[in-house]
Length: 405
Image (cartoon, rainbow, N blue to C red; front, side, top):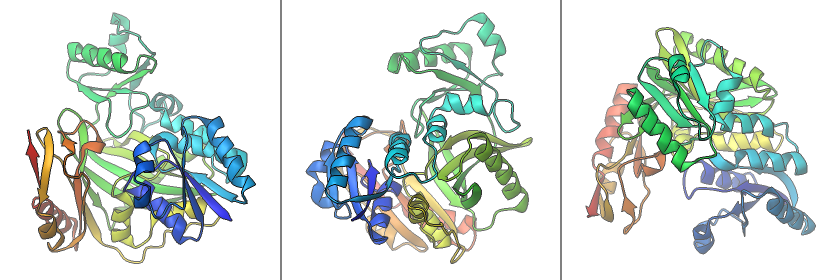
């Protein structure tokens, strides 16, 4: 029985769509999860053929489950994860049970923001930075080496805008460092220059060291207590100068991290002095990204990524080209969700491709401290980016969360 094992999934978004893609491709799908809620909601995961409750941080426990599956006749074709914290472990297991040319070491390095910065230090696109080891404190010598304020302060393992803070002066910088040390005393902290400019996200697949760009997406950022990306514009046509600059950065990353096969997304800002790297992640972006690219170009990126992992050649041939904009919905106050209105009106709005609302009645909602606190999105197509953006924002404005304080 040809089987794909997935380590972790969210209920929706790219990680869940990957499991559905595995089923579509004809594989038996097994999900390793440490989420008790998913076990209780087993009937809602019809695309998961077998769900196994196991500690997904424990390699030996997962190896035991894999050996058990093999003893029952499962042929493990690949082991994959589309969830931040599990990608490196999935590839370590792959190296033991089903090698596919991906590198667990490269992924582990990319997941560590401090390791990434150190590996790319000195390159033209790499920001100025310094790393404080766990529980270190700023001294006068350290302060002198820092770029000018504002500065960005973050945990070396931050994901989804969690633990990424802006410091506008020395006292605020010290407070942020204390806060991060209290939260994770064993983790190092990165302090880096604040980079101004339009922010782009680039989705790509690497196959036999050749880079295939799946999409270039301009991001809109909402500045609150955290940097939350609330708008994504998929460019149907990318200016030649920009695509050439992006390829230079990607080629450098593939060489530095020795990537033969794999998926990644890179966030960069376009400055007067060229592209500057914000971060690298060794997977497709979560949330609506797969559906955005499907609406823009017609291919399914998670399906093509799975093909890469099972030894087939991925194909990112564009079936069409549409400008696509995705507007996320956040809230500005805390409360218990009583009801959501406007979903039907949003779905019937011109140009709308998809409307998704995440929370159910009775869920506690809050202003965003991470990407996980975005509660709905609308994807819309248009002849131009301006039209797609306008349609998405207008439809998203129909969605209202009614809260009980």
